[in-house]
Image (cartoon, rainbow, N blue to C red; front, side):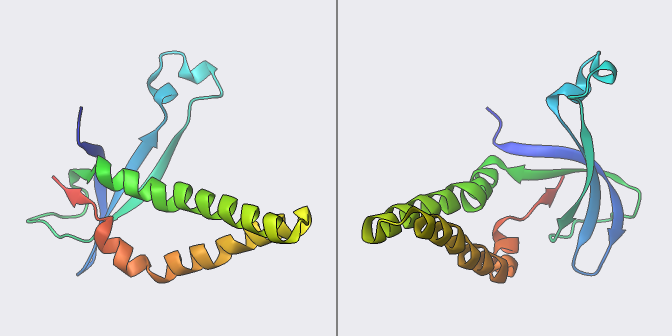
Length: 135
């Protein structure tokens, strides 16, 4: 099992602190022979910011952007699993104490605002943790 996730891309621009790489993210269906006849096939262009500079790179070079699968797992946890647990816990606690479903539902949804606000405020710290590399 591979421990790295990699995408081939082209360098769009280079700053003094960041390399911007354009990748094409495709679904599994996009490589299918009948994808042109099916509405399920899709591909998206994305710009990946790589904050670790590497050697003699210039705009237009083809590079491979990599990330560890552990990093992807952590990103999924922060983006989906932790907020889901927070939502369910707040829903259960407010429902237990108040007995009002509407209040519990709104409180559970409102609990996500500070979570994602804190996550946004810590984005610079997470940028170091969730860093891409160029091979």
